[in-house]
Length: 333
Image (cartoon, rainbow, N blue to C red; front, side, top):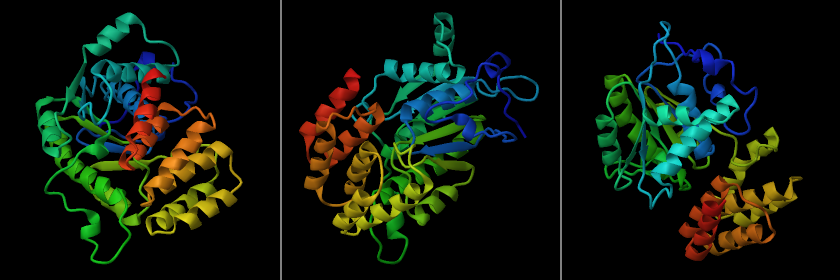
C-alpha cells in the first residue's frame, strides 16, 4: 500500500481552511493513494479542482520519501469546447499550488513546476483521442481530465437505454454513461504506467441513484460529488429538495418546481441561480433564457464557473447572443 505523505516544506504551509473545493476532503486522515486508481470530482469549480488536486497529488511521497508522481499531464478537450489556452490552464495549476500554500508561487518555482507539466489538446472531444493521449503520457504521471463530461464515444450505451423501463431522460443519462466508459478505459492504462487519474466534471451532481451506482461501479474509480453548485450557504434541507425540483422540471412540471423554489426562504441570488439550473432541466428554452437574463439584469456578479455554466445553458437553449455575452464576461473577469 502506498500512503499519502505531504512534502515536508509543503505540509507546514497548508492553509487551515480553503474556500470552495478542498482536496483534503478527498484524502482524509488515514486515506491511502494507490497508483492506478482515479478520482472523479463532480460539480465543483473546474479551476479549483484542477489546480488544487494537482498541487496535492504532485507533491506526495511514498514511505521512503520518494515522489509518487514524476509529471503532470493535462488532457484537455478542444478549445471550442473548453475555451482556455494552454497558458491559462497552467495558471490554474499555479493558482492551485498558491491556494493550498496560502502564499504566491515564486518565479523559480513556476519554472520548476512548468518543467513537469505537459498540456495535451484533443482535436475532438472523443474518448478514443483521450485514450491515445493517456497512453502517450508515459509512466508515473498525474493524468488530469478537465471537463471530462464533454467526451463522447460512439459505442457507449446510455444508461436510460439499459434500464428496461420508462423513465424521465436527464442530461446526466448522457454524460454519466460517457464518463463511466472513459474511466473504464483510462484506468487500466494508469495501472500499467503507475499513474494516477483525476476526472473533473463541472456538471451538476447526478440526481438519479442509477447514475451514482454506475459511477461507483467503475473499478478503481472513486467518485466525489460536490454540494449543489453555488449553494454553499444553504442547509441540508435545501440539498435534499434540489433533486425533487430537477425531477419535476424534467417530467414537464417546471411551474410546480419554480413555485416550490419561490416559496423557500433563501437568499435572492441563490434562489435565482437555482431557478435557472432547474429550468435548464426542462424543455422550456424560452423561460430558461428569460431567467438567465433576469439574473444578469439585476446586477449579480457571476463567478466565472457559474457564468460559463449559464453560457452553456444559454447556448443549448438556442440563445447564442446571451451565451457570447456571458463568455465575454468570463474572459474579462
